[in-house]
Length: 221
Image (cartoon, rainbow, N blue to C red; front, side):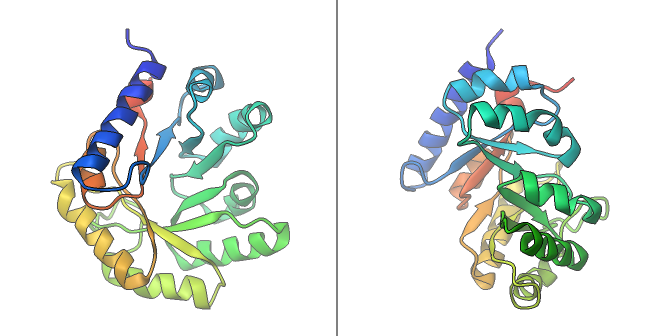
C-alpha cells in the first residue's frame, strides 16, 4: 500500500507540473493537506516529511488533535475549511491561522468581536457557493462582491481570499473561472479552489491554494 508520505510527494510533483503548464511561478500554489477525520498518528509522518499547511472541517475535531502536534511543530499553519457556526467563532479564532468559510453577516460580526477580544487575527476567506446549491454553505455569487465590501467596511475584517467547492457532478472549470472573476471584482488576491479530483484544473484557473485530502491520506473511514 502506498504511504501518505509517498502520496504527498506525488501530489507535490503534480502541483509543480501544473504550475509549469499554466506558466505560473514555481511555488505559486500552496498545498493545504486536508487531515479531517485522520488521527494525529496518521498526520505526523506527513508533517515530518515537510508538509506544514493543513485543513480541518470541524473546530471540535481540530481542538482534539492539533494543540499537541503544534507543540512539536510550531510552524504549522492550520486552515478551517468546513462551515463555521457562530457559537464556535471564539474557538476558531483561537485555533486557526486561516478561516476559509466566512459566508454570512452573523459570522463576520462574531469574527470581528473575537478578533478584537483575543488580539488574534486569522486570515479570512469568503466562501462562495458558485453552484447556488441549496444544501451547501457559501454566499451567492451575485452577492459576493458586496459581502466582501461589508466585511471590510462594516466589520473591519481583512478579507484576503475567496473559496469555493464546485458541484460534484459538474465540470469544475467554469466554477473556478467564476471565482477568479469575483476575486478580481472584489479586490482579493487569494483563491482557495481545487480538491483531490480537480486541483490541477484549479491551478490552471489561478488557484493560489488547493485543498487535497484523499489523494494524500487515502479514503476516509
